[in-house]
Length: 85
Image (cartoon, rainbow, N blue to C red; front, side, top):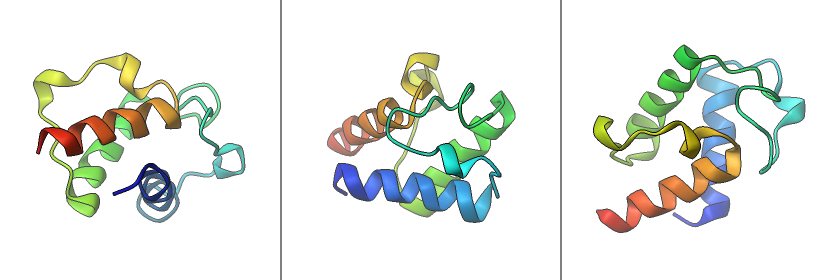
């Protein structure tokens, strides 16, 4: 998947699966906690949906908070995970 497809996939998951109400603030630099108001449980749900819906494996042992700061850092993290495959 390209970076743009990943970002669109993240948006779709937040809209359809998580039913996030703050999507008007969605952009590549949007912070998951501060701008999109996602708590830790929602981030875990997002990770689960990324694995199931986008088919990207995310091992628990590599999860670090800095990769989930913004939509852009999450997309970069997912790009790296695709390369590991």
